[in-house]
Amino acid sequence: MKLTCKRNNGPWLFTMLLFVVVLASCTNMKKVAYINNISDTEIKNAITTLEPVIQKNDLLSITISSPNATASQPFNTVVTVSSSTLGYTATQAAGYLVDQDGYIDLPMLGRIKAAGLTKLALKDNITKVIVDNKYLLYPVVNVRYLNFKVTVLGEVAKPTVVNVPDEKINILEALGFAGDLTIYARRDNVALIREEQGKRIVKRIDLNSGNLLSSPFYYLQSGDIIYVEPNKAKVSAASNTRGWLPVVLSGLGLVVILADRLTN
View 1 (cartoon, helix red, strand yellow):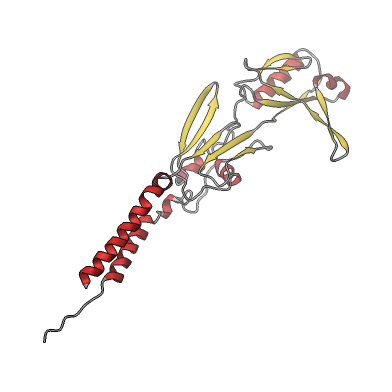
View 2 (cartoon, one colour; view 1 turned 90 degrees about the horizontal axis):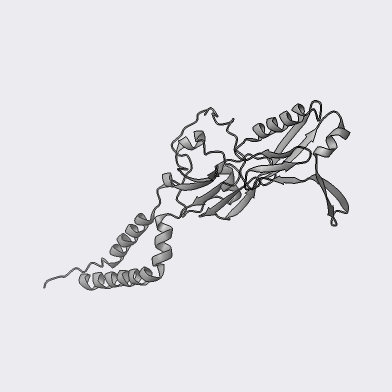
């Protein structure tokens, strides 16, 4: 009598197929982590003096003071803002909008060029006009942005516009305000869109690289836009999920049935 041994390979084959699918879907952790190719070190900040230039449509707060408060008053336009919820009246300095020609109009001083200058350069120019015309003795000029903001879009948890009152923010902080990147974000090709002197600059940034910390684009400027692209997995999932998922499931079922028939 001849004995026949039957070996059921169905479960084994299904396990192998599942292993292959899981292995193919694994993500390279080096592509997920930020600045992963740098060890403990100290990086000299060579870009602390990098100051953005004023652009058209920027809104500036400009205050002028001196030891003589009465003489300084005409140089400062103020508006009164009432707050019904808090029950008091607050007074704040009005903003000066840089017009399409790049100028601002200041009380007593007239039109002054602002676009293309740093805040320090504009401050020096205003001070020089005051001193040359002997309007004030020992004038103190303060220039600040009222609309310093950056925009974060794309594969982040919460796309947002970040208002920056202290006028200093780096790209990692901006991404943090947007809830960080999603797992589907492409970290090696983040787009930074910046407008300077009427030109739009697009810079590609690799968040995986340690060179990010010494990059001149590490700190953002007012009006910068950060766009995070989706990776291939997200694009494929969004475009093909409805089409390929039933096919794959049917194929896996057919393979298991055939394997079971062949082994029996």
